[in-house]
Image 1 (cartoon, rainbow, N blue to C red):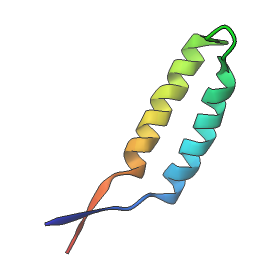
Image 2: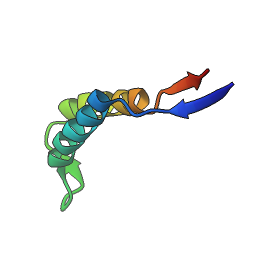
Image 3: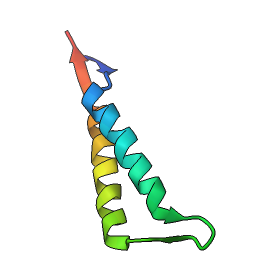
Image 4: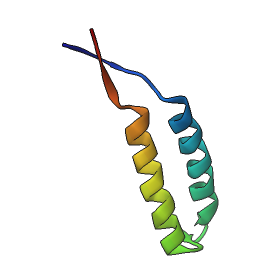
Length: 60
């Protein structure tokens, strides 16, 4: 069986939106986050969205 990685459009949009929100939470001068719990939630959502985005589908 061959596998093909097909990005899901909704997952790509979620990755971009959550990634931007997570990026805005980080203070790069002090290397801290503004709200640590919210940043953790964003990170979990970001990783799950990436997982759905690169989900493998079989080719018949």
